[in-house]
Every structure is written in structure tokens, then in C-alpha cells.
Amino acid sequence: KKIDFHVHTGQNLGIYEIKRILNYIDEYEMNDMVTLSHAFSLNDIGHHKQVELAKEFVKRGVTLNTTQPINGEAYPFMTFLNEGVDVNIVNDNINDHWNPFGTGDMAERLNRGCQIHNFKDEYTISRTLPAITGGLLPLNNEGERIWPKVGDKANILLSKSDSSAHLIARLVPERVTMFEGEIVNGEFI
Image (cartoon, rainbow, N blue to C red; front, side, top):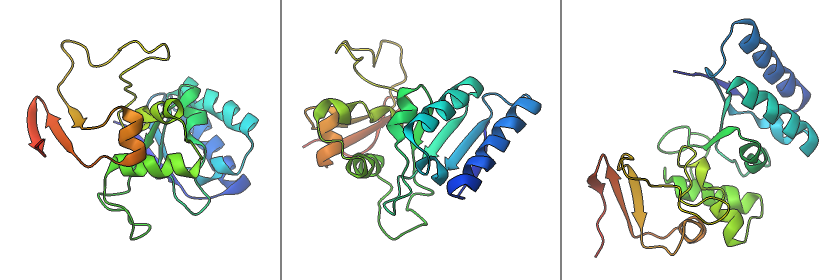
């Protein structure tokens, strides 16, 4: 189980706090035990520094959770995902406590993240999917199917969309949710 640090402080002080947490991870041998939520200060540093920190996160198994807020504090989550950091786009709760907008729909939250960062083409949008699937992508960069595989748990969202990018960009409403092979929500007509 991970310890979830909510780092709301921005700018240099927030980066200082994150670096202190990294030092504590080393000092107390807590690799793979820490999540940083919000971490708004990651948007206050340049790309080069983001990549440097991403490498430090990967080295220590740090997970990042982000709500991708629309107030200018949404860091470029794909920079971290592309460097191998476990990134999750999340809500603070089923409905967001920070503002009245949102439904708890993770595709909707990812849609917002794509809009904030101006992702517009199908490939780029499709590559954001791991931020809401626990790191899973159906296709690798060469277009080969890598998920699902025989024997994988049947925990899946099925939708009447042409692709994962279509689901994210258009928020296709026709969806069925399966948990452990059983339909738990929705139906196709």
C-alpha cells in the first residue's frame, strides 16, 4: 500500500517539498511506497527539470496522481508518462471537491487533460489512455495488440467507439462496464 502525499504548494517551495519527499524515500527505504497527488509545482518548472524529476520518480517507484485542473496548475502528465512514471488522472472523490464540475467519469477527466495540453490527433490522444487504465494500452507503438491477453482479468470498459482516442475525444456515451467478467453497469442496445 502506498503513502499518498498531497502536495498543493506551487513553485519553488513545492519542488523543494517534492525533493524532501524523495530524500525521505531514500533515507527510509520506501521505494514503490509513495504517491504524489496534485504536485502543482511540476507545472512551474521547465521541461528539462520535469524530465530530471521523472527519472527520479521512476528510480524510486513514485506514482503521480493528477486531477488536471483547469486553473493553470495542470502539469504536462504525458512528459512523466513518457518517461515511465506511473501517472493516474484521478478525481479526489466520485465528484471533484475542488469545483462543481465533473461526473466521476475518468474518460471525461482524461478528455479535459487532452484539451488542456492541446492534444488533437488520434495517435497522441490514444497514448494518454494509460493514465486512466492503470498503465494499460491495447496497442503498442507499432500497432500490435498487447492487451487484453488470454488469462487477463475481465475488468474492462466496452464502448461503441472506433478507438480509444474516439472514446476520449468524443466521450462516447454507449458503454458497458465489466468487473471480473460480469456486467456491472450499462447495456448495448
